[in-house]
Length: 487
Image (cartoon, rainbow, N blue to C red; front, side, top):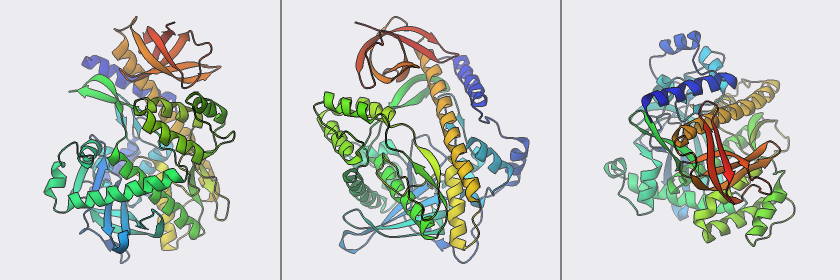
């Protein structure tokens, strides 16, 4: 795709941010504050532990530079392991009420478009001074978990610590190595003990995965569009698939977020919880299962759905992402809510947990910054930095802005896909129905990974159905991709 086309996408992304009530640019006051920050926050006080000697590593996307978390395993007797998750202490550098905090609290999330990343905090912070970058001495917030061989968390603690990332690793290369399909990544091979360290982490993560699935956590495999560039030109949108290394981080983060939620509850503190309510379209999920020869209960049941998904992934792995996408669409969106101490937790249906917050990505999500501040205040025995009314308002705002950011990301992904497809009008594709309502019917194709509207032949189809479609029209400016069903 020519450079002028990529520039057009950037312009569209900028406009989409503004239309959705997001700020694509930092204010003059925020930039002035940024100019005054010249170094990472220094460690101070006697309560900060020195954990720099541990074999910490980060595992993230190949292109990620805004590193929020590190992990390390300490094997104990009897198959028990301590899993430590280190979270960037963003609050130590960006104080509540400052211009940079105001920008973050407005957008509430980094926005990752196919054209450009709009970081919640400037890159000087998110990819450097508040980032757990390789070989850098950093202040962090540690979530310390003792995990038994059966996957239960038998003890936990949270505290500030100094850490050093010994190896910046990427999901795909680590997963290939763990699966025996590729060599050890260079940093794994060069850091003494890192190979054994990662295998211990992987073993514990797989135990956590089995426990979570048994309790009803939904093992879904979705295909997220990932922009592929040659130099600075967009050339494709491909599926960003799950793998074993992503599972390692995923299950550690689920456990760590649960620990922080219970820590705040134990301290008698209010918190910002992440919840996913029972799906309103459960009956359609039941229909999808029945079409595959399986029966699900008439009322929402996470364990039954989890068991069904595990069975289907084993039976038809190639088709499982399609089924996963249908289920994701029918489950609905998560949201943030205020949780007061002693109040019954609403829980997260998809993860099958009652106690869940967001605390592990403060460079990318504002709810995690809020939670970090709440936890640090609780540790210090200080008053909460937010009142319950403020938390309730922030919960609604973060939920709304998360939805706005997702709309921008989808919009630019659609515009990028329309650019890639505009020369292919008239071609036919295999597609899956991803949405069906009074507002319209939507289908997804795989090459490139794109979603468009079914404008003809949509009668009688529903989420999860597979159809043959023909591309009839594209509109880059509006991100429109139109298909007609082929009989």
